[in-house]
Image (cartoon, rainbow, N blue to C red; front, side):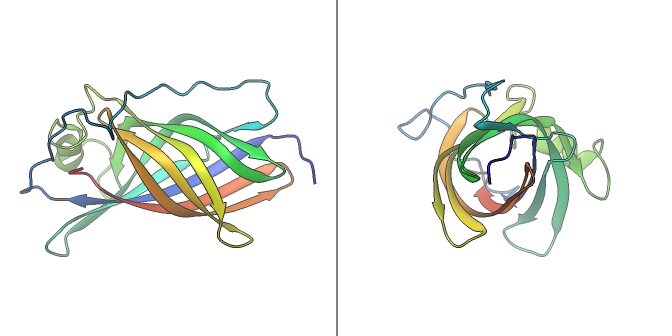
Length: 185
């Protein structure tokens, strides 16, 4: 099965732990922090598949550490590409436009979203994008893979590992995964 790459639909559900009373951990640069490189697309290279930004989204769920108050919403992908070899994911980078963050129930212009865009959360004015760059992929079963990647938010990069269901059929790849992060880190 050798398809000419056409499109990738990506849904990544990200759970955020909101802790309004807990300060963000010290953001000094350390060995786990590196500068964020913008996504450079490999146009014309058939190993790289462009993420379809109109059909792809990052869903998020945020909850306080204590209590049942949770919010859900979306943030949209500005650009991205995944590298596939023999219909298997081997790498890639996705850039998320943090200015597009929305609350599922209240849209993009409300107190919660304004709070999330402030410096005590994502500091969107100074860090308008977040990126995830895949560094390793290992199979779990026929349709599920374990991805290790560098996640960069607010100029801080951390290694993350999460499972993704990936289906490649007729030149279209569909990916769905869940990544849990603690925004205070």
